[in-house]
Amino acid sequence: MQDDSFVAKFMRTTGKLRAVFGPANSSSLDHEMTEDNKRLLAQQQVDALQWETARRPDGSTYLVPRDGNDQSLR
Image (cartoon, rainbow, N blue to C red):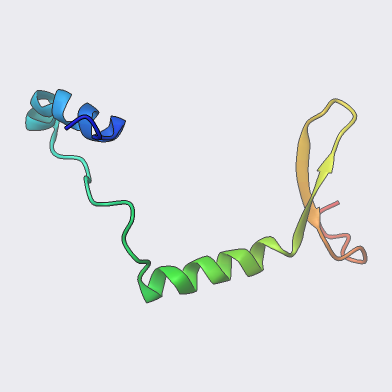
Protein backbone atom coordinates (compact mmCIF):
# COMPACT_ATOMS: atom_id res chain seq x y z
CA MET A 1 0.00 0.00 0.00
CA GLN A 2 2.80 2.42 -0.78
CA ASP A 3 0.70 4.16 -3.40
CA ASP A 4 -1.86 5.36 -0.83
CA SER A 5 -2.50 9.07 -0.97
CA PHE A 6 -1.73 11.36 1.92
CA VAL A 7 -5.46 11.67 2.58
CA ALA A 8 -5.89 7.90 2.86
CA LYS A 9 -2.99 7.65 5.30
CA PHE A 10 -4.34 10.58 7.30
CA MET A 11 -7.82 9.03 7.52
CA ARG A 12 -6.37 5.74 8.76
CA THR A 13 -4.21 7.55 11.30
CA THR A 14 -7.09 9.60 12.68
CA GLY A 15 -9.49 6.66 12.95
CA LYS A 16 -9.84 6.99 16.73
CA LEU A 17 -10.77 10.66 16.46
CA ARG A 18 -13.37 9.81 13.83
CA ALA A 19 -14.86 7.25 16.19
CA VAL A 20 -15.49 10.06 18.68
CA PHE A 21 -16.31 12.97 16.37
CA GLY A 22 -17.93 11.08 13.50
CA PRO A 23 -16.71 10.01 10.10
CA ALA A 24 -15.49 12.38 7.44
CA ASN A 25 -16.54 12.09 3.83
CA SER A 26 -14.11 9.66 2.20
CA SER A 27 -15.62 9.34 -1.27
CA SER A 28 -13.47 9.08 -4.34
CA LEU A 29 -12.33 12.33 -5.96
CA ASP A 30 -12.10 10.93 -9.49
CA HIS A 31 -15.78 10.22 -10.12
CA GLU A 32 -17.83 11.78 -12.92
CA MET A 33 -19.68 14.99 -12.15
CA THR A 34 -23.43 14.71 -11.78
CA GLU A 35 -25.69 16.68 -14.12
CA ASP A 36 -26.65 18.99 -11.24
CA ASN A 37 -22.99 19.74 -10.53
CA LYS A 38 -22.28 20.35 -14.21
CA ARG A 39 -25.15 22.85 -14.41
CA LEU A 40 -24.03 24.55 -11.20
CA LEU A 41 -20.44 24.83 -12.46
CA ALA A 42 -21.61 26.29 -15.78
CA GLN A 43 -23.77 28.87 -13.95
CA GLN A 44 -20.89 29.84 -11.64
CA GLN A 45 -18.58 30.29 -14.63
CA VAL A 46 -21.14 32.56 -16.34
CA ASP A 47 -21.56 34.55 -13.11
CA ALA A 48 -17.80 34.98 -12.77
CA LEU A 49 -17.56 36.53 -16.25
CA GLN A 50 -19.49 39.62 -15.14
CA TRP A 51 -16.70 40.70 -12.74
CA GLU A 52 -13.11 41.80 -13.09
CA THR A 53 -10.42 42.25 -10.48
CA ALA A 54 -9.17 45.75 -9.71
CA ARG A 55 -5.96 46.36 -7.80
CA ARG A 56 -5.42 49.15 -5.27
CA PRO A 57 -2.04 50.91 -4.95
CA ASP A 58 -1.37 48.97 -1.73
CA GLY A 59 -1.65 45.69 -3.65
CA SER A 60 -5.03 44.57 -2.34
CA THR A 61 -7.68 43.57 -4.84
CA TYR A 62 -11.46 43.90 -5.17
CA LEU A 63 -14.11 43.00 -7.71
CA VAL A 64 -15.87 45.50 -9.95
CA PRO A 65 -18.54 44.91 -12.60
CA ARG A 66 -17.04 44.23 -16.04
CA ASP A 67 -19.62 46.58 -17.58
CA GLY A 68 -17.92 49.98 -17.56
CA ASN A 69 -21.23 51.86 -17.53
CA ASP A 70 -22.40 50.17 -14.32
CA GLN A 71 -21.48 52.52 -11.45
CA SER A 72 -23.60 50.80 -8.78
CA LEU A 73 -20.73 49.33 -6.78
CA ARG A 74 -17.99 51.90 -7.39
